[in-house]
Every structure is written in structure tokens, then in C-alpha cells.
Amino acid sequence: MSKVYTTEELIQILAAERQACLKGERLKLEVTVSGNPVIDQFIRTDGLQKFNAYQDFKAAIHEYQKEHQVSGIIWRKVTVKGKTLHYPEVDAELTALSSDLEILKDTKNSILEFWYKVTVSMDLYLSFNNSKQHQQIIQTDVERIAQRTEWASLLKWENSSFLEIILQLGWGKPEEAYYKRGRPRSGSEYIHAVNPGNRPIG
Image (cartoon, rainbow, N blue to C red; front, side, top):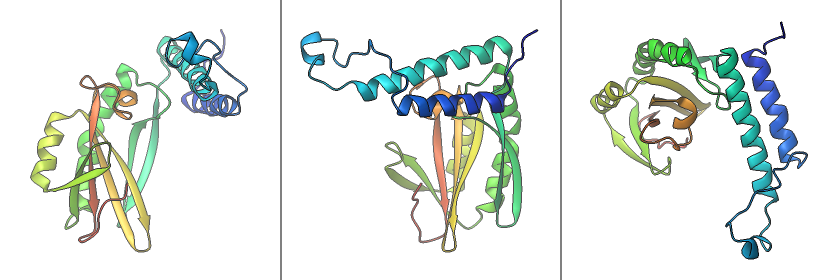
């Protein structure tokens, strides 16, 4: 029986392929920009060729995951204000299996509980317009959003004078929700917690 690659090995394979594509070692030559051959001959397509070559490779890896049931989940650790949480997240380059989605759903409440504990007395903002704009909200708004979503993830920005904790509340497939290309089937909302008087930067 042939060896089945692990989640970590697939992440490394994708990272190596992404670098090869960026260096121009892999190109998808039949890419066209406009579909009009007269116009396309005047447009540089090398960036698009690199991007599409990588997207094709990534799609093949996603099929491999499904065929061999290789999870897309990686385990993260976040420490905020002396409290630590280990939580699952689907790697941004991999796909989520049905079993992965169940794990994400099962851990949503523990992520929310942690986030509520570490953001007490912080200002809360909902991001919109691809995180270019933020609207201040309150915890009951977060609770309403949480009720409509299926899974959660965290991100932290911190230095000696600034702390921002971002709660991602999502539904559907994480790989589609991250880049907002799966709406309305998949998507997410981002809640930013910052110290009073600060504005989100993430």
C-alpha cells in the first residue's frame, strides 16, 4: 500500500509548490485575461499564469485530501492575558473534510468562552467592506452573530502597547469563507476587540 501524506506534509508540499509558482517555475500557459486574442496579446499574463498554476495544484491537493481522508485541521495555541487556549483551525491552503467541520462546530463554544473572558472591558468592533471599515458593537451583537454561525477561530495582534484579538465567526467551508468567495453558502464575520480608545488594525 502506498504512503498517504499527512496534513503537515501536504502543507509543506503546497508551500514548496507556491514558491515554485512564484519563481515562474510553473506556469499555466493557456491562461487568457480577457478572452479576446487581439487584446490578450498586449497584456502580460505571467502573474496570472503563476497564480492559476498554483490554484490547479491546490485543487489537486484538495481532491487528494478527500480521496484519502486527510484532515485539513491544524491545532493552534493562543495566550492572552495569561490564559491559554488550544483550538482547531483549517489551514488556509487546505480544504475541510466533513469530519473537520464537525470538529470546528464542536469547539466553537470553547473558543467563544475564551474570547469573552479575555475581552472583558475591551471595545468591540465589527469589520465590513473587506476589513477596511469597522463599526463599534456590544457583546449582545456578538452573541447574535454567534447564534447564526457554525464555527469560530482566533487571531491576535500584540506588542508592548497594543492588543487586538480578532474573533472569526463563520459558516460553511472555511477555505471559502476566508476569502469571501463562497457567499452566501460560506462566509464569516470578524469581531475585533481592542483596548478602550484604540481602533482595530487587523
